[in-house]
Length: 343
Image (cartoon, rainbow, N blue to C red; front, side, top):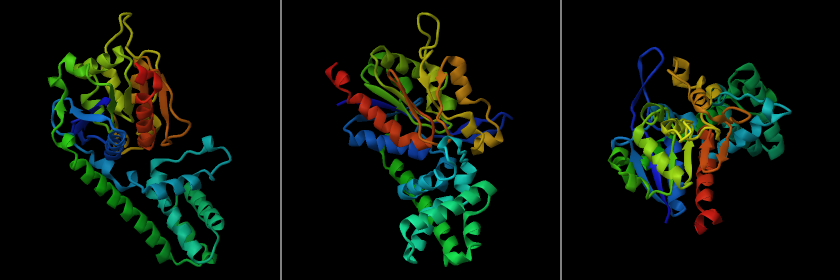
């Protein structure tokens, strides 16, 4: 059974550019989904924090708009793809996805279908309304309510929007409860207590995101020891969103360059960062810039918030919360690779 070091921040506050403190921690879905995927794949998962203190879920990461049910998320993606001829020309911001009510598109389409419209026609109608809301920065429900030919009342439309938000909040609460039920998240191992021999027993490391890793995993000498131990044996090193901040703890190679100099990698981008709560308040530093300054070949996706995973040799990085499932699957695939199993 492969052993994976599940390295989670235990930070609870971060310092912004103006010197003020801001709540932080790990992002719930980024921590929960890979953990459950790894356990389901039969991996031996050890939750580790830098100091052995229980990790703290970032309250911002528990916001309802980071927890769309899969069916709503997938339908919204199919709607957004209709906004422009070339998907690379679509810029879909966090504000647009969270504050305009667009995630209710599937539910409004369901109302139209219940009224006798074919699924394709319902999709076309909600896509056109969503595109107008996206372009004009208007509420999805307002745009739909203006079209009297739809046969829907304003109350029905707003009800669909409210129901979607309520289900997202329930999912956020459920994920928080599932994390709280994981013994390792209540009683993690202290990274600082592990000897070099202990670290050498792991077959991979995974670092979930949230802004917390920028506080206690960047420039952390114990994280550097873990990364060096795994890198020596070409073991998978994976980090998601802000988790790649831990890579900045890696030591130098004999030639004086950063351990990951010249590696292709991704992380939460500055385009995405300036849309977040902390980014709007003013971050003390930006992760993608720090990685590039260290020697990374930065590879962000064609559009913000889209799933994007980069694999370069033994390094696996994911750009944002939308990359959570893809990076978890990439880690499992890497650990199950025939060459690795033979070794």
